[in-house]
View 1 (cartoon, rainbow, N blue to C red):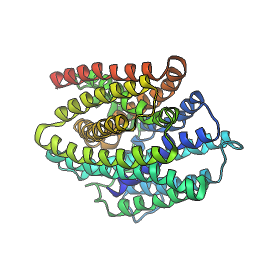
View 2: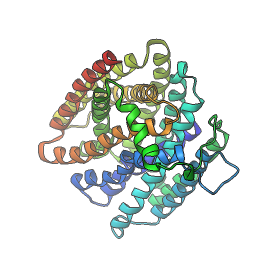
View 3: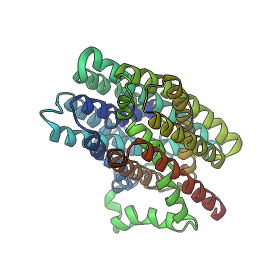
Length: 395
């Protein structure tokens, strides 16, 4: 949960929180949507994730080899957030893009370590518990870097807010040092003659042998599009309806993320009692309803607080369900000795979908309006459910 918290903190600092920062500086929806590309390292972390299964770093020698990567990533993450805090979008936009990309890179590396340690430590029969703990910590981190950062920006400015978020990441170091070690220490890089084959191709080959792999990939690429759109462009949309920054932080980042926490906890129980597929189907149906209500808000184009609260209640709860169900489901396909590689490959596909959806969503909103954007987002969940069903049949 502590490591999940530190996973959630930088996540919003390069997405919705940064979009508010950029919006305040006068950047339009297209620019904000394009800027979400700084989170691309989340989508491509498989390119270096296999190294955690094979390479031993010659630093922090008192730690398990996997934890060495984690500690290096966390220290680098904290440093990059401190640097980001000292930059201004109006004067250093290019450097903000570079440093924000580094934030995403180090945060993604930390996530690789977290998921590997979680899967190794979890009982396969009760994978939902570990997924729920990580998800709950992640949502608390989102509250901190969402509402917390916005509130702090009102008091001490964005520089102080981002410095405070860097300090919060120390929690991840505490969590990392107290996680159980995987059963075996990894072997050194020099012991592998066919390093590329053993490190990068072997894990992929194992996954490709799964008969429903194409449906699994299709499901991963479509299931999170709707939630991404509502999260990445929620701030500009609500501001266009007349909601203030304080209202946005209170409603979406405190109330909304609190419901995500409840959804994550409920998701753990549902996965344990009904299975991961049931949890995923329920969350997808609720997100279809949430997208439809967002489209209704956009159609009315007026300040409707009650309708917004209802909409966010459904969206936030379903997002928590989806997070736990998604993590639990992907964990079932991860096999030793490629735990880190398998989970990261599958999860990074979802991250790639999220980044591409954020970029395209900004363009769609600018060209066709918010109503069309939310209706199209809702429609993407229909094939996602079909792909899930096909995956289950193949399994």
